[in-house]
Length: 290
Image (cartoon, rainbow, N blue to C red; front, side, top):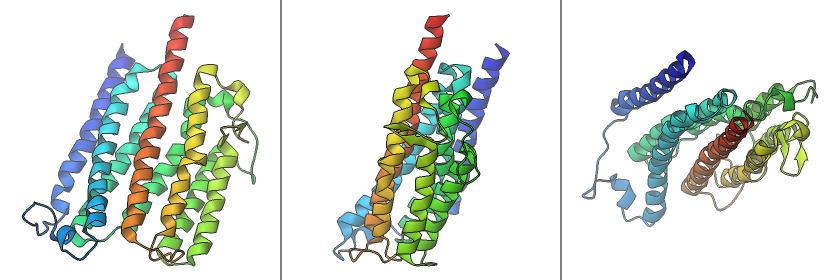
């Protein structure tokens, strides 16, 4: 009973903390000049790109609302799963909570200055991508994580290092610090490292043994792999549209932002939903076995 009360208190505190964080940042974004429709003037300046700018603005808005709602959902559902899966729910909530905070600022930057901030984007990714990869041990259980090494590192080391490489070189390429194509290729190495560790929907990873994963968790485990192997493809596609990276002739910061925003909502929230579904199914199986 005490543990359950403590868990509920922790959930409420985390939700309250995020709420206060948003409330405290309201004054951080300077007021912007609005048109008659209440939107920033540059969104309807008649310069020929109004539709794309409106879509970009609203996707930033939808992004932080959706992430915030998902945070509340995952924290509310945390106590509905068995204790061993609550860490998975906490990680899911942290991912979307952190993303909601950054999306709030990205929307503010775009509304005030009409520019897409890659800095806030990468600050979000450098935190959330490692957390997304580390959902595997929290969901499948420590027994399913192998002792195999890749480049001298275990599962956690490979995932963290791969995430740092992927996000770090991606930022260097998009910011213009290094050649755009070089940043894309080196960032892809980090992505490959994560896939090697977690596996694919068709095979065990070097760090995950499918034979030791509970049957009721296999669907969710493979769904998470689908997100990493296929769902993450949209990020290098968006990278190609970054004006600074200069890889594609069809460069547009707004197109890049639209692709990234859609990918984030699908991957971050979807990643959490499939993990929650697996945790619920495993919890029901445990209850039936008692």
